[in-house]
Amino acid sequence: MNNDTTTARATHDWQALDSRHHLHPFTDFQALAGEGARIITRAEGVYLYDSDGRRILDGMSGLWCVNIGYGRAELAEAAARQMRELPYYNSFFKSTNPPAVELAAVLAGLTPPQFNHVFFTNSGSEANDTIVRMVRRYWDLLGEPRRSVLISRHNAYHGSTLGGASLGGMAAMHGQGGLPIPDIVHIEQPYWFENGIDVTPEDYGRRAAQRLAEKIEELGPERVGAFIGEPIQGAGGVIIPPDSYWPEIQRICREYGILLITDEVVCGFGRTGRWFGCEYYGLEPDFLTIAKGLTSGYQPLGGVMVSDRVAEVLIGRGGEFHHGFTWSGHPVACAVALANLRILQAERLVERVRDEIGPYLQRRWRELADHPLVGEVRGIGMLGALELVAHKGSRTFFRDRGAAGTRCRDHCFRNGLVMRAVRDTMIVAPPFVITTAEVDELIARARHCLDLTATDLGIG
Ligand code: PXG
Image 1: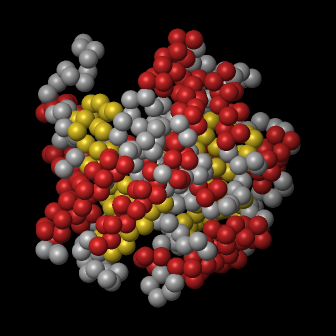
Image 2: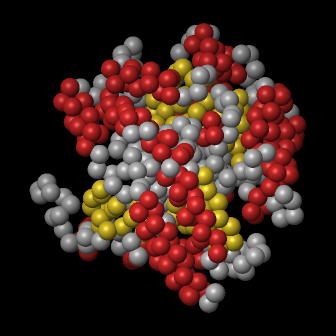
Image 3: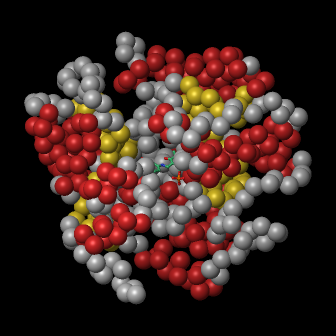
């Protein structure tokens, strides 16, 4: 057994072994076996390196998570120290461990004032499953068990467990395995570029928010427990709602007394230039879903921030909450999260996103608006999206939706850039530590790959 696994094999040997034994997430297994997976062997700063030694600028921070960049020794040291001291103990049966305690307190301080409690999970999906159970338990304890319905949006992404995928609004996911689970329903997403054909963004935002009130009335207000939304939809295509949307959603939640959940898995820990997306939009949610940027991806960790309104009922009314995971409050993951949050604070990376690198990225990103393939450019902080269209100047989507995006994404990979495609929407979400020169490189590579895509499609 060779321990130096990253140099032990040639690329084609890795690929052959991978396709024999490894089932990848969200993958057509057969197609990948024919093609062979890309083998990423190491990373530093904003760059990935593959098994052929090629350098790739990671415009997606892994999967929206490596916010402090790759290769931060402080996190490796925090993990090693904690593994030597206490690699594992559970937080069931009246036990806890110092990193979990410290992290819970730090999160209570970092999140908006109504949040003073956290429930730890290993992922965003598990955090959202936990929220489904907590919302229903909350209303049970208040003597309103019929309020079991959670309302979400079409094309939302809230994870891939049964609860997470049900909360999500991905039709393809619902088509496999009999989802959603009962009492989860979906309304229109606030996607002006696609749905707001003949209205201003402001009017459209109010109209999209009204869908919530309509759905509550349709179901019966006594049946609805909560509304969940990503402040900005990430996996759905960096869908930035018009400014009129969230205040109206907040107002409707208050009017009907239902709980508001903001899923901060992508927006949380600084990506919008605020610590949390709910702060960017001035919202007062009752739950936050957290994961990804909590550890910058160096360890799997997620959690649910529980507001005082909910915690007072869950704690105050007593009785066991029958829920938890072996790894809830895992000491190594929590120690790494603490080291990550220390770096975000010490290096003022959230402020950097708000005041320096975010505005720089947005300015350069918007220059791509002149490209013949680009119908809309949008972005906030370290999030950016380009809508590829068949006819510039009109919102005409390609007939074979997704094909242009996939082409562009493949050109990017071949040309040293990770830029993700959602349908024909191209997306970036780079690490917060990216330099201005690296942003310039990202933009230059993106433009080159748009050119290659336009040539393939005979456009321009
Ligand atoms: N909520 C949101 C908003 C997410 O983006 C989850 C929950 C689930 O988190 P876990 O840790 O269970 O994966 C996510 C995850 C993509 C992509 O292709 C996005 C996610 C995961 C995988 C792929 O953009 N987001």
